Length: 369
Image 1 (cartoon, one colour):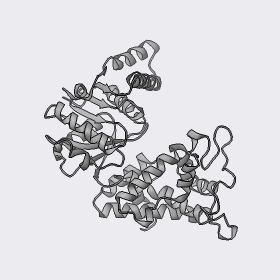
Image 2: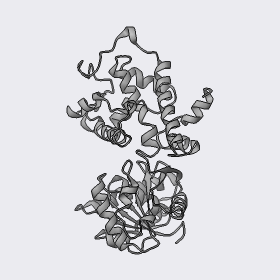
Image 3: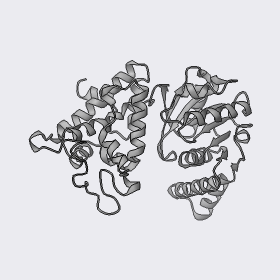
Image 4: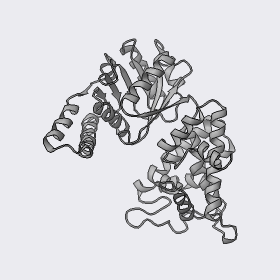
């Protein structure tokens, strides 16, 4: 096996699984893909083909060369009837199924029994314990690790490489080499709740929600201040894009696994919006209306959930941004001190994985921290 031509097994043909498969196909790998849902492979293949067409267009190939490039990669995509077939003979297997610990553990038990002894088994989980998943691979738990790609995987360059308690350092090095051979930038993370990005970036939305809860600033004011500081979107725009239910679930998972620290307590505003079915863009409304104008929803939060905005307590853009940046930086320092990751990897992860204009440690150094 070489970095430019191995065999990748992918279990899960949804958005993430198909995206990871596309990345490997572009790098010259053969990909074996399985999904237990009827029609999922065909949908995944269609998604991969669309992604390859977009990539070929950016490469500026002529029409004949473009078709040949796409077809050459799709020819290396194989449908597999079960996880055992995916794992047999694969150099690396990546799981991209539902975020359910028991489902993942059952799958890894099957993969461990079918994969060759030198194969690496990786989970794409964004928040679950890699160590707990690896325990199910009773024969070879040392070859199990986390490879957390970010969505969309063909576009975003960051991959968090996560070591479980029993992960072999050689497997980490090999997985890192493979992913970097696919053109990705890797950062190393301990098996800690949320890894790097989903932990350190949690205050980006939590601190904004605290201001809204206290009536210190409105949704549009906070988003505008954050965008003016160099972020591509504000925290409420981001939550609407990701989905309020998805964001709340991630916030709750990290909070629970870290021992329910008050600083990361999920907001009752999020919980109320989710109960009301206001999930963001996918439902037509969240913090903003969608499907036409993109204006903050008028008085979207009832007074028993959040204090109404009070002009006498209103924050200007500078303290809004400062509070959010400081909260992120404090979380970054805690993560570094706990051994989650190095300063350099935390900065790279927030820059590449969360689109920050600079990492929290770079920001601290610039501000004398």
